[in-house]
Amino acid sequence: MGFVTGGSFPASLVPSQRQQALSSNYLNFADGTSDWAQQYLPELYEQEVERYGNRTLSGFLRMVGAEMPMTSDQVIWSEQNRLHVAYNQVACTGANQLTITLTTPATSAAIKRNQTILVSDNATGLITQKAIVTAVSAGVVTATPYDTPAFSATIQTLSGASDLSVFVYGSEWEKGSDDQGAVSITPGFQEYNNSPIIIRDNYQVSGSDASQIGWIEVATEDGTSGFLWYLKAESETRLRFEDYMEMALVEGELAGHTFQGVNPAGGGTAWTANVKGTMGLFSAIENRGNVYQGFAGAAAPGSGAMADFDEILKNLDKQGAIEENMLFLQRQTALDFDDMIAAMAGGGYASTASASYGLFDNEEEMALNFGFSGFRRGSYDFYKTDWKYLNDASTRGMSKVIDGVLVPAGTSTVYDQMLGANIRRPFLHVRYRASETEDRRYKNWITGSVGGAYTSGVDAMNVHFLTERCLVTQAANNFVLFKAV
Image (cartoon, rainbow, N blue to C red):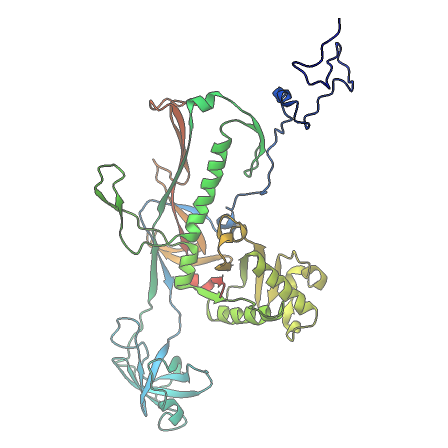
């Protein structure tokens, strides 16, 4: 008995009684006449495609800092002032008088009688005159120059409050004199503080979704690999929260006003949020550190970068002059640094002889590999790396304001108010809330009635994440924030 063509099958198809590949029983999915054949399962790739590579951004603070517990709502530290006495808001108000604008509530300057001083103009620093102090009263310093009975006419014309600078370089006393009436200088210090913030996140999956398991093969950013089911999303929530733990401390801002909104408990009543913010890395550098705008500018590759970089070095000399520093840069600024080193080696820059390749065993060829990790300029060593946070299209890569940051390596000595002693700490370190009974460094717990948790009547599993922490940026005057023009 033969098959009747037509009816259930297209006229061009004749089913075979056996599993044979014949031209008469071939199904063509592209001819538009065999849509019923879609009942067959498609070819399914189980492995997830990692089209964005490693998506995590954390790791910056782990490289440059440390984590330490604390028990209070606030962390306070003190930083030393400069050792020597100097003022940069000085005006010449008479032939032998200098008026110092005090930036502290003191009633008199720290300059004392019989001290020797050097007076210079703020505009160029090239106009100078040395003098000896004969009297000090309420911010007015009476001094007589060594070379003339009165200050020069050039200095006397600089009578603005910010025209002159003065620093003490010694003293001179007559034979048989005493220092009766001399003022003792009490060293001062700068006190800074920061407060931790609470960072939270959670992931929820319903009981129904948890009961329908679908597997997917993954290789996650935290180093694990294999098959996951509905906890695939929980894994990504965890990774995202770990990034928030760092990003919040880098971007944090102190609140400058009171936040108001709708009461989260309902009722439509007014609500004042107890949100105080925290001072993050960028904010600390902008308030207490150094900001350099337009690094390399629009100059030819390498040439402009070297001139700008030398300006940064001159400023570092005026600060702590810390020998080793780390550069965390976005892509274009990192390329500017590579071009800068290449221009030095190619002889196109006048100061090539002053450059050093000490970190590369003084091998120029090794240093000019565009993947270099360090170089030496003057008396400073620099270690350069790309900061993924500044390049990622879903974070700072969306904004072109921050080009990079220079972070001093090593530790600083500060006075800890809680311990009552001088201690050494990394310039950047994280403080988190913790006690003998509660550790809030990284809390993780499960609630609900799904996935082994039986804490409530909610037909879901809730995975909670919480931390309470802040960043301590010490000696911010040694940091440099690179910003676009």
